[in-house]
Length: 256
Length: 284
Image: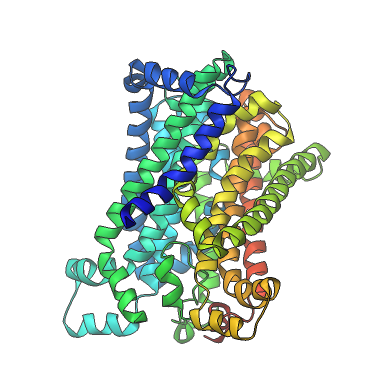
């Protein structure tokens, strides 16, 4: 009974909204809004057909490569910068400025410097996603608990072991906060860079449909991006609860 | 309410933490500042040399001296200030609209257990949808005008603020709630004295995140739909093969970004002067 009730809560509002949409477009839909079945048909013919390999896969691949590079670079540089005081002081004003540049404005420049290719799109994703991860890692590493750090020294933890057992775990809640921000930024940059200049990709496909006034097809692309966003966020939460399980548990028990 | 308590519900976007307590007292208080200046100058120097002898032609990667000249020249150009004004206008209206609507809806939804449960799945689904996906729709509906930009900015920022407001309302202390009931506070009194003070740090975090995202999206929409503003100017500079102009506009965007960060930090400190996270930071 209880499970049924939470299922009702879960499904209730979405069902109502879709019913309302269906009802409002029952005489064939307006110019801008397709009917639900038009949208489903468009989605199936495009994204479950050729569009998946032609546009969706390259986009997703670029996004994942960009995110992976940002995480590796951000965490690696962040640990180095956060652990050494003078490096942090040397770079912090510069990083503050570079971080503040709204990353979308870099797209035309990279287009000029690199050209319309995968490297340009991966670069723009890295340029946007790097900062939240980098700055959070620096903050996490620089604010490691003194007692923890001293304890590590007493136990003779140095080099790789110190990274593996002290620095990375202590900074990981902050690092994950950074990665979470990066996911949203990465998706935005993937889409905008493809809309601005590309020959394939989800963003390119959507803009193309818009130019040809193929409204249901355009909406199907929007839905696909929504599903992609939801999938990324679910995936992130699974990884986070695995990696940070100990941290969540620690805070739970600290509050009891 | 401890910091740990706040973080339990919200490990991701917690209100500001007290700064790291390590102070550079032993090495002289000006060392971070001097090193920071040295680092920035070093970067400019490397850029200058790279532009002259690097693998990229200096036509596409102009040296900082040329970019700086262009930036200074821009400052006396009224069109430049108009473009900056357009971008800032969409930014400001977008942030204010999304904050107000998210605050009102968030307090209403958050105060009712029924509404919270009933809207949870919908919010979790709509929130991760990238707002830029709606750019073509905005272009069709409005064309290159302010409304198109606002649709995207407000859609993105609304969810960011709403989620923070919901966290904040959920974080209200149980004992404080019972106390408020014992004192027979009415709805508005509870909102004012009970919910609002708990909510405020979360709201400020949401607004700070939204302010950054709003600037990224405002410029992104200008690039693609061509609404007037910095994004359109950069796109035009690219078409005209005007690399110094582009870099000067990027520097402008960076300055705007820093101003936004600084403004949000200041507002947060002023509004939350009574809160532990700010007071703790001032003490150390």
